[in-house]
Length: 353
Image (cartoon, rainbow, N blue to C red; front, side, top):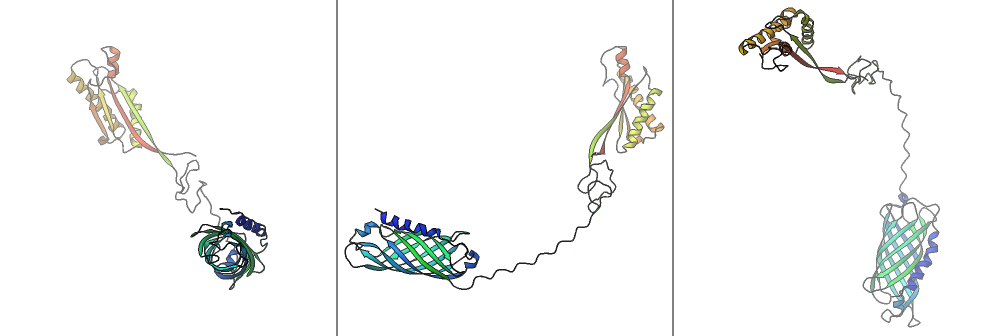
């Protein structure tokens, strides 16, 4: 199908599209308003129609039309159209007359006077047929209510195969008053300056949020101004050796026993087990009893000399069951004649800045 005539008609409209308004009402001023248009249309049928007796040889011609529409919102509008067409005929000197009616949906481009249009139409010019149309247009506003417009459309046949073109030139009037602009609100008063809140202990948390006043300046604090602590494990060990076949605590170990006592006093929730041991010389039963006496002797020093509650001190004899040194030498026997004790406690320490 040749579309030369249609293409010429569409291209002829393009120069007109450059004449858009430099100052026009805003989309907000046009929405929710009805409008009406009167226009002239130059119409170019498909060349196949011009050669067709079925279409009475319809050729280029004119039309006068009327639009009635409504601007739904800032972008969208809907309109109904009626056009009376008067087209030439390639087969006779008589004009071919008829009507075109239809509806269109219009989309207005934001911040530009340009719109895109699409719809459906019914023709009685030449013969009855229906078509879908798509086009582009522009408005040149003379006032806030009155605009001159130019619009180009392509009409694609639905019930019959054809592709026509048309260019409209007309005027549109918008009915009703534009919505009143909302009054500019008065500026809010400047907020009063916020009161200055101090930080007495200089921990970085203001006094209104500080739940731990006077924290040490060296401590790292949490979001409410309290020192952050970590749990540390601390322990103390006691080792004391005995002479052969003896359960007498040597004076040289009293200072170490006192350190153990002080540790127990510092951590009152701890207990201690004194483990007594013997060298593997003699009968096992005797060595078991000897190791128990050694453990009891150290426990007695803790309780009687350094004031540790007896309920916190447990003395256990292990005999020769847990030797520290293996072998049957004098050196090994000397190492194994001993008591051992270890106490471990958890302590919280402040995290430093």
